Image (cartoon, rainbow, N blue to C red; front, side, top):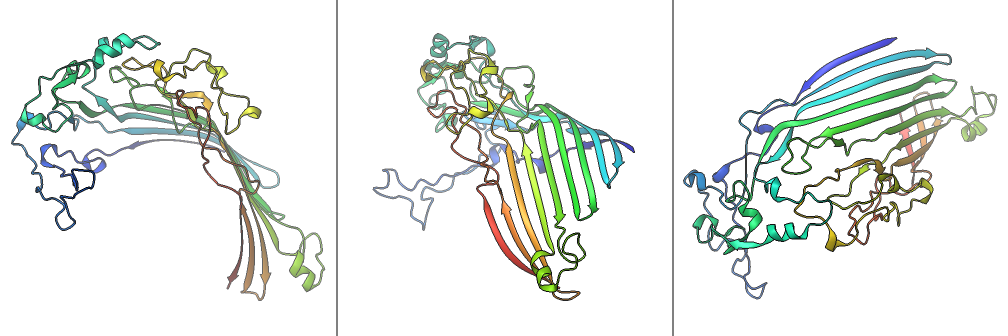
Amino acid sequence: MARAGYGIFYDLLGIDRQDVNQGGFNQPTNIIPSLDNGLTFQAPLANPFPLGLETPPGASLGLRTFLGRGISYFNPRPLNAYMQRWSLSIQRELPWQVLVDVSYVGNRGTHISVTRELNPIPRQYLSASTERDQARMDFLSQTRPNPFSGIREFAGTTLGGVNVARSQLLRPFPHFTSVTVREPNGFSYYHSLQIEVEKRLGKGLMFISSWTWSKFMEGIGYLNETDPVVEKVISDQDYPHRFVFSAIYELPFGKGKRFLTNTNRWLDAVAGGWQLQGWFEGQSGQALGFGNAIFRGALKDIPLPRGERTAERWLNVNAGFERDAARQLASNIRTLPTRFTGIRGDGINNLDLSFFKNYRLTESKVIQFRMESFNALNHIQFGNPNTTPTSGAFGTISGEKGHGQRQMTFGLKFLF
């Protein structure tokens, strides 16, 4: 049997799906309980705002609203993000009540909303070198007389001081620290081969297993604020391989079974009625990246062979990374991608096992004994390693994820 399908799914537009942008009509008032680090207090619980509440300016300031701060606004011409999904599958029934389903599933995301910075430091002032450009950094960080100093609307903001960094004055709108908007420039695509094998209950055994081989790419952010297009990169939700197997097996002992079918009631109460249930889950690890780092080696040298990976050394930290913090990049056009498909953290390798025993008291009353083991093989599921080359913990793992250590539970259930 062959099946195919195609569908389009649209996202919603409007402020029901994002924070309300109120401009000058909201104004927080900070609680400042002490001005001398707790030696004396000016804001008791009875009156936490002794100086009163700050009043929102509303529209009274006009174009002067939020001067000296970061601002954002709603895109006046938004587009509906949408997903196109398609699939083609072939099913075949084999002997012993086994069903095989082989499918291709794809997905394409279009007009995904992406945050765009409209007030970046112009590209021509940033370093294009792959090594630290100290002269360019010093040029941009050098302070200059602040033209906004003394203007009432800038008081209390980061642009209210006497001096300001040259980088701020070079921005297209130097009177704001940031100007952002959400634009429908993002995209994603997903392709997968999915194979499922299922056996219906027969002779006490049933199971279902599935394997997915996939790739998930996305463009939902800008590598540099001045880039004309979004960065096409492997998704942090990309897991090339995922395998799941689940089975229930009624052990062939006791009355009506293959072995001990004519046993007495007492032996059947001990040996009969047992069921074994298992669940295995295996999955690739998450793709990793190293930020705005300096790397002079070959990417293939970063992952260690599987047998050499430990929590203390998951990556080859000597593959070509610049580890000295004093030599790191800044004020530059970044070229190192956000993530790499061939460099990954630990995956999932987990097995859960359960034993069930049913004691039938009468036709309608059953006592069930349950023994369950989560992470039965006690496989540790490591978290992602530290990926900051300048950190002393670079390449090490300090936590775990997923299923935790082995847990065993015992229980009785009365069914009637």
